[in-house]
Image (cartoon, rainbow, N blue to C red; front, side, top):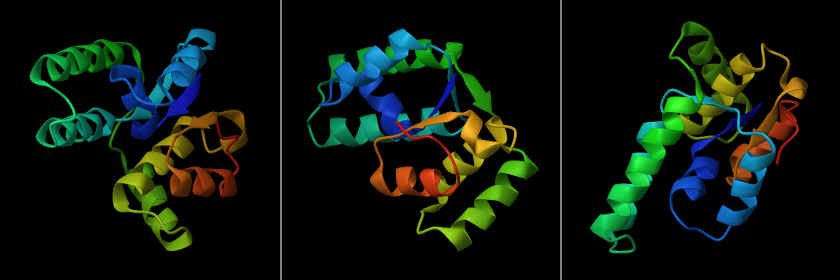
Length: 139
């Protein structure tokens, strides 16, 4: 199992430059752990693409359907006090936005507070750097 943030999940549901690489990673290990807000973050990104007219309505519907199917299979870290506590610490330690701190905090909780035991998958450079500093192997 790997921890996937939204930036890595999105290319699984809509064609992007790194989609093939990430789909290959899923073929190797299909178990996904992620934060409870990931689905909302992905819908937000898809809606932005639709507003920018980079994603037509039929493609948007298909992407949402793929996201929903994927989310039924993943392990979701819920909004619990441990996540909030870790996110608050991470915001003071790393140059992260709140949602990114919550993603990384959820990964810490998912790893049972042993980041070296769980691979962190992200396309976000800043978040990946923070995850590495926290001890995660990063893909």
